[in-house]
Length: 440
Image (cartoon, rainbow, N blue to C red; front, side, top):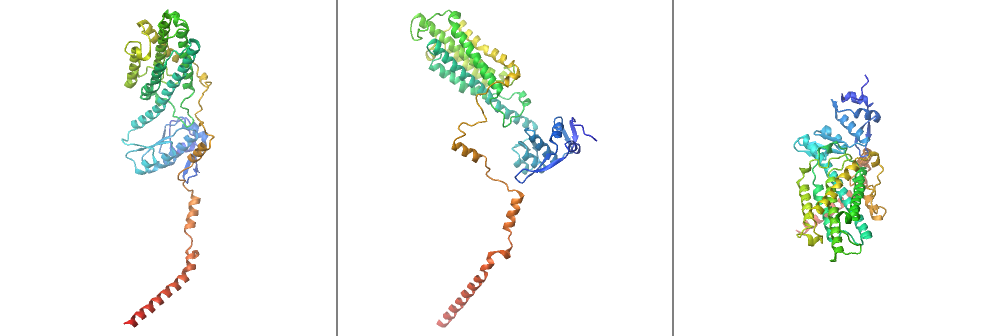
């Protein structure tokens, strides 16, 4: 009977027939693994297979080894002695809290409540840590590059930076401390379970993240250039490039006002880009998904907006050295900053084939200074194992060496000499006893 390869459920005998049986393979550490004989047939069967009835431990090991040969991440859940081999073969293994102790020792994690919901939650939170790192790095690198380019352009065309030292410190606080609190504490979304597992070759800052970094950096610089070069006309604040913000002339006051507008515009661009970084998927368009699920993020947003508003009032105006803005000027800065939401949406509407062409500056598979002697020694030592399990042939040779025939032992060569020595000692002790008797 020919077994259909597109079945979602089959018995163990049908499964073995479909994959042409299995072969026993030594993993090099003395353990026997069972791999599918025909990997191509196994690939076709496993794509649709959901349930295997009347399976034994060998079938579990076949599936785990076959999936690893396909470069898949394998998760195995077990509770008995028969599951130990599959638990050791899997990339991540879970043991039931009510299972045997050997299964718990072989597993990476133990489900104390024997609940599969706990398994799903552990996977969600594990993937969420990885996603939160991408969220933060996307925001921080974008803010860094944007700030660097804006300061350079300001020095070239305005003869001074539009952002002074205190402003840069505040931007750095937004970029590092507050953004880390807001983005790194984001709870997992339900769609994270639809994402594939990460592998050793998966990069933290992938092409999708770099697309957003490049695109939003260009967008931020573009908006800043519009306000920088068109701000005098839009806000009716004429001044000369030679004017100084520390002066008291009309031109000096207008230039200081223009610099204040640039500062608020830049900060609000980062404010809304922080909202963009809540979702880092290829087609995650809705950046307000479960917006109120993280009150730390909400608190950080309120804090940034409040300090930004007070920065143009008498409360913090003396700290940031800014000018007083009227309501129209201030909220125009908010509108300019909110365009970051539009820029992120336009980037996500770009064709996916463009993502593959995005250049990546950082190569995560290389190590800085990997050619020096210290790093080479570390890599060599890191590849070694603290304990290497001997193969069966080496163990048998050690047993033969330890169980040498006693007739071949060198102790027999010294036996006559030991006997003669004992006789001499006994004769000497006897003479001493006779002497003692003669004294009495």
